[in-house]
Image 1 (cartoon, rainbow, N blue to C red):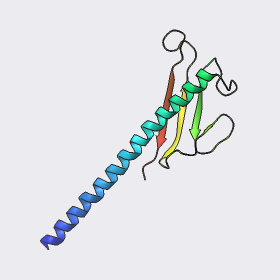
Image 2 (cartoon, one colour):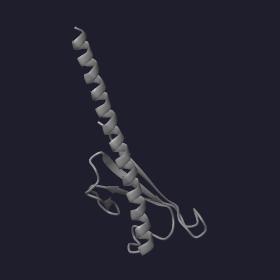
Image 3 (tube, rainbow, N blue to C red):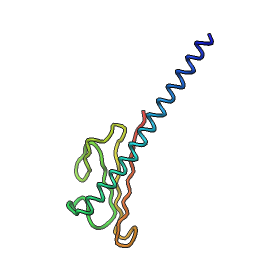
Image 4 (cartoon, rainbow, N blue to C red):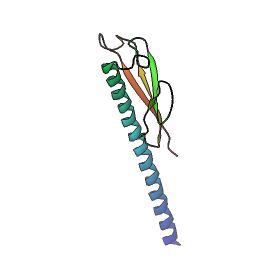
Length: 111
């Protein structure tokens, strides 16, 4: 009986640890996906190569995801836990003088 209870407790601890580790990996993946979104936006703004989707004025948000249309950023290599990354580019002079603030927020799921 004691061995059975001990085995059950050990299995429960291992199961909880595996779930915690999976959640932590998903969270870290979302952090790096958000950073990738910021780098992508900064590169688009620096190159000024797509004025329709990345204009020089106003505040706007673009969504990075595995599939989409229009001005969505298509990134097929996003991990399965990442649903999307919203990239917000604020209007000029919203940060330091003559600059634009860029923010990103990653939405991830943990089953």
